Length: 325
Image 1: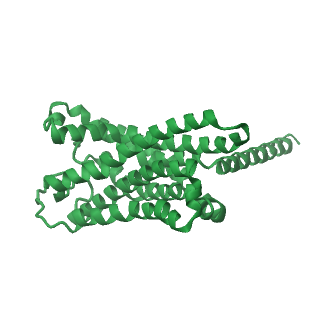
Image 2: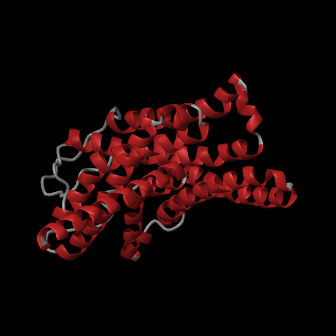
Image 3: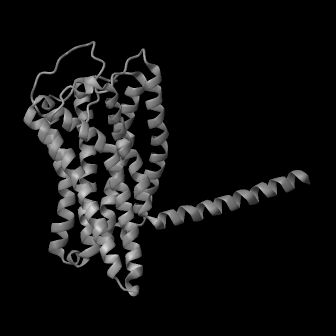
């Protein structure tokens, strides 16, 4: 997992802090608007968009995850970049902050990995989801595990893991969770909770692209409309997967090299620490990609914008006419 102490920031270096804070702020505000828009739209159209559309379940959960991240977790991270240190630094707060941060990250990556695998079922074996038993086995149970497992795992290794934390008042950052000093737990966490879902996302999407291209060559004209819809859903998944790959692959590679081959890599090349900064943009940018899979919402927003602009023009013309008179 990422380490909040990786980037050395002090009160004597305001420029990097300001730039990083501003970049996150620029992304966060539109992300909140987009997330709330999608969330409200899905709730208002629950029957058609959620209850009767299995493909939107993970999108809905990713939107909720993003909403929690950008309203609860990310503001504390932004505040740390703004101040140059973590505030508050109370141990209880730090542990719960780590728990929320790590849990949200892994829930999102696991859900995206699951969506990458389930897309094969939606595209090529949709008949399996018509049966109650296979629907639960292939769709609902994996999603439930994607949520429950990270919550319980990080609750165990962060909140309930017994160890002694140093009480260094000069330390500007929250102390790292003690489990990170446990070689087995740390490497299990990194390999299984970060590297494994990332590799799954990459492989599942490469195989999906190959299968779609091969199948598109064989389909008949009457099936083209169905495949056009599947193509849109596939492109949305590819965009979402690319976000995770570009956001997490650099830090994953660096951490793997540091753990198994080059333990002094970050000390020798401290500039690599900034690649960890990319991970903060994954959840805030996630809603925009989820929006690509909701053409109905995009159409609704466009229509409302047109109506708003028309009304604004009418009001403006009437105001001008009244002023002339």
